[in-house]
Length: 226
Length: 226
DNA sequence: CCTACCGATCGGTAGG
DNA sequence: CCTACCGATCGGTAGG
Image 1 (spheres, rainbow over the protein chains, first blue to last red):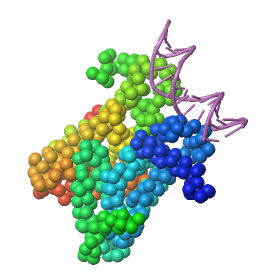
Image 2: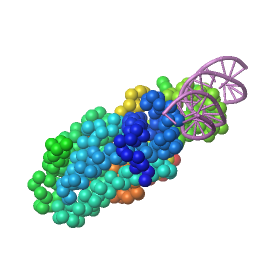
Image 3: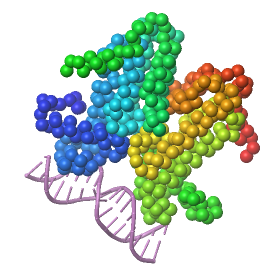
Image 4: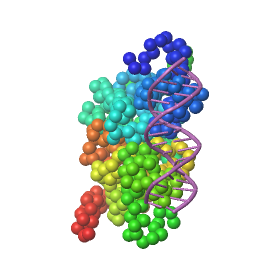
């Protein structure tokens, strides 16, 4: 499978590939995929260009591998921790909270992943554009499924339109990001207040008392046992 | 002043400059500012590169002129029509409605202006990034002022935080755009329903009966007298 | 992984 | 507005 190591993960080739992709993600997240060139990558890594072609057969292959690496980082920071929490409105809240955290903690050192990349490539053809919209769809599917699960458990009113709710929540997340980039005008605290208000207006009486607490508890758990 | 014609607006130089910038806006809005190169522009316009340098002294100057042209298009399609309507919640609604229309009517032939460009450049230094954030600030200021004016007229509850309201509205707009690009999943009708619901929840009893009607009426007015 | 090289294109200039 | 040119960089290849 593409991206899966043929050699053991500690091998020299694997390590080198990892170093290259980490740098590629950094460049692209700061300055966009357009700023990612073989020559620049080689210079920053003190390698020859042909050395890079030994790892990636072509420029598009490098771009796709870079996107895949960024997706793995996003999964690690947002999707996987949320999936580890209880299904329902708690997981829905965790998805929103973790998304905000991945901005606040600058998991990507620029504003490009994935919001900028999506708006730049969404209307275009080709495999790179498809990969970017695929990542956006994966995220949105997780968000919508969390809404549906919360409805299935009776924690969100059954007459709410799950898809519409998911889009509104994502709109608030992107809106926060926009305001944050524009003039640091909206804090994470304010964004969370708005999102919690929206979730509480959708919630029934069946919501667990600690449903809106668990992310930080889960992070404590992670750090407690290495 | 930069961008202001020194010669009469019908002169050959002016017309040529206009043709060049229209093409530049098209390229950038489809594929991003990064795809805008002198060579490509020259080829598409059947001109020599040095012919372009006669109009724009440098690449950054061309980029800034392209952004300014795009801003003028946006002003014409969104800000100016809204400013022509009654101040207050009516103008606020018109700003949102016209913003949605500028997406639906594909005023820019790609998704890049201005949402994509903003997320790509917001975190970067330099005059181009400043120009892009300046456009975003101009738009947001108009939106926030419309909220404040509506409050001043007693049409929106006085205890609402105007800035927060403006950010939430813009979040819904961008969220609609995101959903629209992802899978044409949200229609303009649904987006307007959500925005009107939000505006009505903020409104007092003093809102004019036809406040949420005027944009289409105004457009009819425009087309009626050429 | 390297050196050495390819044709194409980049932003830009000289001179008219 | 043009032709003719510049050095730098682009993605990519040959051969080791």
